[in-house]
Length: 320
Image (cartoon, rainbow, N blue to C red; front, side, top):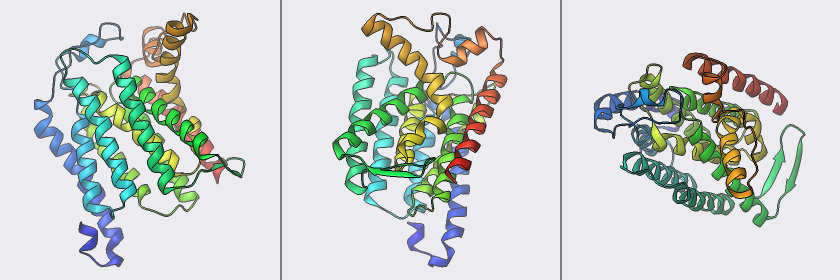
């Protein structure tokens, strides 16, 4: 690893180089390998879903692997972080195999795999961290029973993976919202003066997503697919757990939660309890605003991003 080859005083220079490396490696790898990705067939029920037909999808496999490589080179090794990186790759691969499959994987199969990954994240986190929970905006800390903490952590991880996945339907939307969420968490880490290298992992992952967005801005050349969106959702959940303030997930990722989560809630209530809600609202919400409110793709991305930035500013001020 590069950090072992240079004096400690040059750690900031190594971090600077690592960030540039992550971005340049991502755009280079996507430029050269994007054509080999599986092709999208379009979606029948999504607004303008057929416009994506023929575009490469599954680009998440590229920027996630670049992120892992950059982390291995530029971030000091720790067993905990290594496990998280492996789980991000596992989550990415389940999405990529679905992207590449001729027949989409069933919801229950993907949901079960997400549950397994979520359980491993919860076990890993509790092994290396305490179950102390802070309500950061109220200055309150308390110890949660480990079993309860583990169950809630599984719910958080599973939810984050799936709402982020469901929000991926407009060029640049889920990537932009994920970066805003991750940078909010990064600033919270700095405000709370949290030690450790995970904050730098947040920067590297955000930069790799930016490298992908270089090609995904409207009109996009390729799409991240489940390989990217599922990995992003998993990383968000780990990042928020590492702050020690897991309940901040709600405000720092609220737009992702509402955009992708309302559709999940709507389908679950109808399928399992025969309860119909939001009958006049298309889900995900990015389809509703484009179809019903006549927003363009660009307006959707910018306005959703603006809402999340305002929430981020409010959360950061409240935590500080």
